Image 1 (cartoon, rainbow, N blue to C red):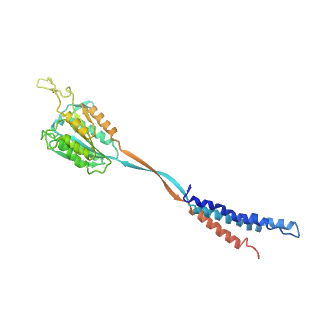
Image 2 (image 1 turned 180 degrees about the vertical axis):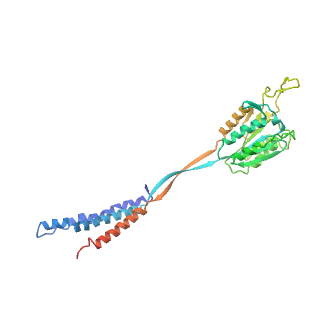
Image 3 (image 1 turned 120 degrees about the horizontal axis):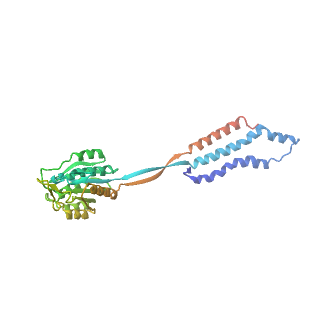
Length: 330
């Protein structure tokens, strides 16, 4: 318990005034003679005299309670309020035809690059809380698959519907960045992040990927880039005679992806298989943490009505007793 106006507690000694006049001042000024020595003792022991003197106690208690009510006692209950400062994350995924190549080992089997990405990103999304997450894909042209949302189950359903775009053989990374930037800039989130995953090089579109990353950085967007770089062993295929043929080199323009990440204050990662891809998204998950700010405050409950009503009640009781049972005879 606490008092809103504790300065009024200095008035508590006033409650002693009725006690002083009734028990100290009166005793000092009542030295007069009696004809019989036993009469004053009997009078002092009488119920009426005792009750009349107890009225001073009621009056003192009423004054003390009134002073306490004036000081305004309160009870403070500590509570906590959590402010969540979430992150807006735009997933930008390459869906060009090359993403259909089944050279990614993950979960004990070989699968397509897009399928491995879909499984890993789904786990990444479901590991987040309180973040707005959107999904954009690109091949020759960018496309918004799912707007920024907190409904991660809905986002997963949209992601399951993505298929490699075998109609166009081009990859417009720069245009995909610009498109995703325009979607992110409308968000009011404290932090904005873009995660770009591709297995190719920018060979279509009107925007240079590095320039697009610089423009994104100017409005506060951080970009992480991920290049799918399967090992030659994973890229091997069998010819007509069941002989194993290895592809040489990789289609990923790693230098451009590194420059994009550097321009937008992010980081570049290379994924050779699904397990490596999962570790990459796990690291990004650790780097981009949602901030939870806890604010503690006191919720006050007023307690002054109790002593106030008690003071009024004692005052009324003291007045009624003084006018009836313990009334002084003229």
